[in-house]
Image 1 (cartoon, helix red, strand yellow):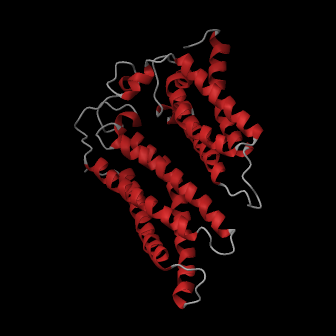
Image 2 (cartoon, helix red, strand yellow):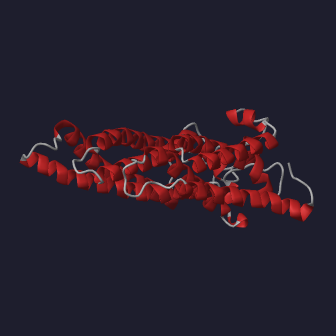
Length: 319
């Protein structure tokens, strides 16, 4: 393993987060074994107090992990300066067999943390700690996945070889690449864009009909659909280059860091959309479907602007 300041900071953040979650893990196990709201023993009172501590820890770690994933992407981007062949984070994350799995698990864990927070908010609005056992049972799963994420991160950074040439983003996202992405790259970009806009229209219909479960399912589908559309249809319009399909280069300063805004809008919109199905109906302030749809709309509006602006300037479609 070689170290850069970015790697040290990233590992330090995840190490401290894991140590805090280990405290919450111990409390969670105790709650699952002995928590009984109907009991008036001293142990029960202690468990109720400890549940607040553990819940605060989990919420704090979620607040840390959201900016941490963007810092992780920044770290990958900085590593592209020292790893031969890498032009951006895309080449770095595929430098060994652990990178892609690590990146995907980081995203999944944030969504799970967010769903845990929804369950926690529901628990706070009950008078008998109705969801306490459920939320800490769910947390045990999250803790295992966070531990797996930490192990993968150690393996990933430990197996980075700065003397080995890696593939650049220009070869990773084309039809000749030997990866599942090559199958997607073979699809007509107009078909990908059509499916993206059709799914967005379906979200609008679900919001108008106030169908939370349908909106949640569509939001779950919208995340990968929007990512694929961003890579294979919208990115070339952002780069103004038909062969450039990288999802990481839009994070660069020459593109005004627009990728950070796009990914933030996409993650917030899809998470709130997914969470809408799990939001208790009896809450005083139910989750309004127009809130996640608003974030989705901002994402769709920005990526569509690049397409229309390119056509306005050149009077021709790029794809």
